[in-house]
Amino acid sequence: MTRHIRIRHPRKLKSPIEKSLRGIGKVYGSESMRSVSLIPMDVIRDQLGPYWDDVPFRKIAFKLCVMGRIKAYGGSWGLPDAPTIEDPFAPFRSKNGEDETISTAKCYVSPVVQPPPVSSSPEITVRDDNVAITESQSPYKQVRKQLADKGYQDKLPDNHPIIVLHSRYLEMGHEKDSQACKNYIANVSRVLKFVSTWLSDRGSPARNWSELMSCSEEPYIVYFEQRERLGQTMRSTSINFLKKLHSLFCSAINMYSLEDKTFPKCFDGGPSQKTLSEMKLLQQKLKIVYSKKLKQQSGELFKRKAAEAGEYPEYSEFEKVMRKIKAYIPDYLNQLEEHFGPGGMVNVSSDKTSTPSQKHLSSIWRKTTCGLAIRLLWISKQRSKVVSNLLKD
Image (cartoon, rainbow, N blue to C red):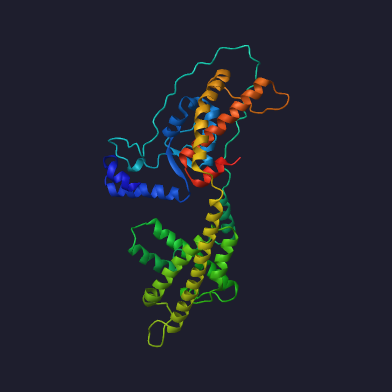
């Protein structure tokens, strides 16, 4: 994305351009890590068109954005329970003009639709429940909460000697205040915090950071197994942690042991060979664990992909459904407007005592809302799993 902006829209960026591009990249990166799509509010308004002024339709659009993990920025929903998100790209945009790619929401004035004349059709009660739309807690957040409750997200203090040493050398190879560098430190800090607690609980607290990296492999294995048991995403997170630990061990053995004056010494004043040998032994054991999890991840991934491949429908089937949905939605919307006007609402409940007119309108309402939901999800996130779920009965 930043490469496209640099090539196609450099005049829209605030100087210095490279600094603005880094800021934009951080915004996109932080949101993409949470599988969130950033969309300007004017795009949502354009999709709804004149139906933006209809509060029920706007509520449906907001709920669909929550379901599809879409963050609409740069404008207000005009709903009591919908948050207003400021434009995160405003600090990086030049004041000379607006960029279509990262623009704020423009004011959209929808045409006024006159209500239809009162007809002799049976009167239908219109009810506004004004139900608050809230985002249910995702499974990812639930796992994070469980990990935090168990203490697996706890970290060593920032002034811990090993954290200070590792941070200093990582910053030498990264830009200042790099998010990647912070993530590396956070990963190893969580593991070492668990190891430190594990040793303290067994009556042998670490007196030096080297003891955290020269102990038994048991606390490391327990840490990863417990995280996976609580629902950690496959084994990829464990593999990522082990990669960062391997880098830490290499730096500790080759550099930190020489620089840190508190590192155990031999009689000649050099680093203790016994401690270094124990650190190297633990490093090799963790490499074996890494290889094991790498094989398990490949096997699990293959099984899951093989199982899903048999469930996916043909793409042509979905195209037929989308053409059908696109054809009937405008007609159903017109029928709803004829009965309720631009500001009306319909009671979607339908039971045995409902009149034929109520049942008909209830059917139209349900088909319209489902059709709009499918279209919005398909436009925003064209993922194979989404398509598969949409085609299921």
